Length: 329
Length: 307
Image 1 (cartoon, rainbow over the protein chains, first blue to last red):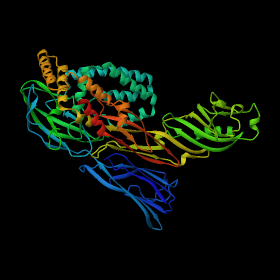
Image 2: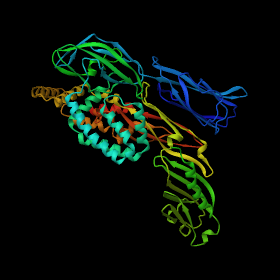
Image 3: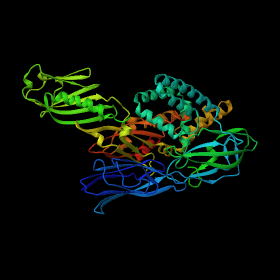
Image 4: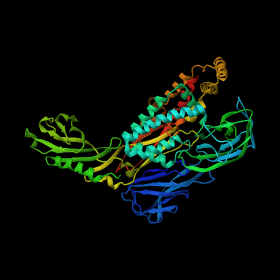
């Protein structure tokens, strides 16, 4: 009698699909009971055609796997609105004559990012040319999972987000190359035309790409290796066409500035806001997601009056302090 | 797309039928090499007594989309490929070219499968999205057959070989935390200088960069340092920071670029995509694996660049 293996990941993201399986040799049993926490729900069960009870409960009984020695599972996991960590056990119990003679259990913890707004000043003054900021918005991610943030100004905001002229020019150049390459790919792979159009639209739009698009995109690259190679070549050509010392330095600065504080990643570190001496109100919205690109409710920051000692522009992310105590790391 | 077992078995069935006319089948198995979408039919056979004496004798085996045949003699493990003649969608085994005193052979017949893209319907492949433990250096991987019975056939059990698994190993925090702050300050001055069009302001940035060059060893070396840093993420270098544990094995790694964000296109990688592989079969319907990322070693290498 041997349990060959039982798998359950120790950790994952809330909302992520969680696999589990058990394999065994030479076990005489009447049924196998599976118990799992309420934040997991069975999505698929493998090698079992008939179940003894409803899958929606936190327990199921398996009498006869199709091929003895293996049961596989895929759980859906739920997201908590406020719990940064959900912990529970998955247990397989082998039962003979009404008695459990073998039990195997493993623990899982599911994490989420949890953004806390610690402090929002009523007003912010910025001094140019040093770009000194007298008050900052303090934000912290108290969750263990990475938070991906898109910083935006709301439509009603007097101050609207923008990109620097330099960045716009650089993006225009890359965008032109990208259009050429997408056109070439569409002609060569007409069956992927819709996907390539979506890709182009998403690449032009600074907002987060949807999870659905990412899944479709990744699946296509995985399943069509010839297209995948051509796509890689196109990206390489865009890179070679647009490579400049300036863009390399610029993108390196963005790379280092996009990771702010612990477990907070800024998707759009280049976004700026134009400023003048005239005080204006800014309404900020933080669109947040995790690394699965599953979105959480956006965070609306209460109105802030921003003024500067002269005309200028500043990167939006510089209005924030990130970290446990709002202290930038 | 579901694996078309009937089509697979038709091909394998023809191989078996062709060989069993002249031989006794002694062993059989089928495997699918997933990355190349190739089927491999392995047949052990003993040529019936007397047939070898006929100098003109041969076996013709039809195999649609045939790509290769390897023939090995037993028990001496003799290479018998000189007896194989491959032509369009078939191969011949020429008896007179087989080693003398060898009656038992194993043929490994490789052919392209009629359909691809079936793997996701046959196997649940999962891997960790983000490593959240303090050390942040382990990623789980799991493979499970969705249907085990489909792999049991009259021509032997089918095994699936070298299935791809993708894990994105996060590296951005390792880079950022190891960069000296004086280097970051210096890079920001260079960035501001490059972006400035006003002549007076450009001059001021030049002077600031000059002052910086007297204070730190990085000014003027930015390009080389960034190149050295970027080289760490080349596949040939980064693989030394990754350990994929049995029953999975390392295949390759590549930088993950954010294609969706044009401004990040030319940036350093936020993560490295590590591709591992594993096998599943009727006998082994599930596999769990672990990828260990040696972040301490990478951080040490980054630090060395700036020392």
